[in-house]
Length: 525
Image 1 (tube, rainbow, N blue to C red):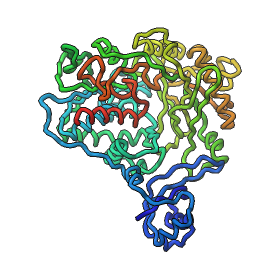
Image 2 (cartoon, rainbow, N blue to C red; image 1 turned 135 degrees about the vertical axis):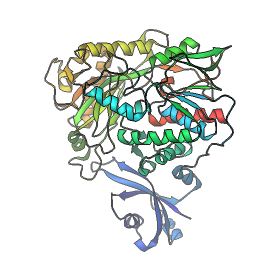
Image 3 (cartoon, rainbow, N blue to C red; image 1 turned 90 degrees about the vertical axis):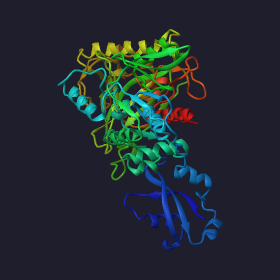
């Protein structure tokens, strides 16, 4: 029998057995065996530290338990499920008469396709963009202004979806059940095993890019067809049932089911589904701007000094006023960069990303304000997209029509000053000094100002002279939600399964992967 021992100090390269013994107040020889199952950064005190959870075997278990030490108890079957990622693997069967079709190769589409392929269904996977290596080359060329923006092949569309150019955060403390499947597969295809143990795991855009080719190769080994530059422009519908898809070149592909996992920026795909009869409604979203600071400022505010061996400091902040709109930080990127995240020409949209090492000079996160669907002024499912689009077009115009992003120091926004000098920034396409009140709606500006003041009280310097706002961040999630039944099927169009962020049921890498996985599991059970 083993023990679960929590709240044990952990340090890189430290003597774990000795740390466990000190925690249990026994000699080192009393610790027979141990396994690290979880570690997280303890932010409850000014001086932060790593704490670990271990599965421990000791020589005198009964005597130790009799002392009733806090955080020490017998290891249970529930612990085994939670920390060892138990999940049923798919039962492999013969392929169906018609293959399932998966549209989109972001996290939702990839994990749906992977489960289907491992079940023997041999899906057809259609992605409008290109493979990840070609995407990286094209994006870097655009950032250097060597090529124009490709509407089909950019930071948003292509293998890995928008998550390929992101921080790669995996914000979930759980690793059991279906989450266990997702995490095990990430490690199988190249993620560091630390993602299985860290409560707030981080992949990094460079690691994500390394995971994708082995995953694609595995799909091919299992009989799946993965087709790039294959944009779906229509659905094949008969008698209220989706029977397949039509590609841009006119090719028609019939399938047993159609999973649509096109992400939150494929506005044409959403319109296609609505036109085909898929029931949907507008959904509230959150928009705002990226705030960028020197990473050392965030480290100082978090750790009270230089971070030393600790990771680049992060934060998660929220402001819920009694009046006005709530706001929060979102997608915080320690040691990261602010990047353009638009797929439509003549628009400006920003996002944040970081590499695995998080060594960039800056830290950034979105400061976003919760906007109800009523602000769109219509019941049309596309109303939120039109609202987003108007903001993005205005930002393009204010940014010299050259993909420069409108930007303003936080102190200038607070004091109502426009056109001030801007600090150096990570944004690769350049900035234009602008009054952000010309970019974002008044209610959003008010929500951001309230949040910035509140966050500055929690983290000294957050709203100080070194803080820069870069706008707009409009695509945190999709402003539409498709109506689905318990299996994930459209309530109005049989055979159609809208999943992931674009369907309004996810908000990040893990939740999108889970939504695609659950739909695929429903189709194979």
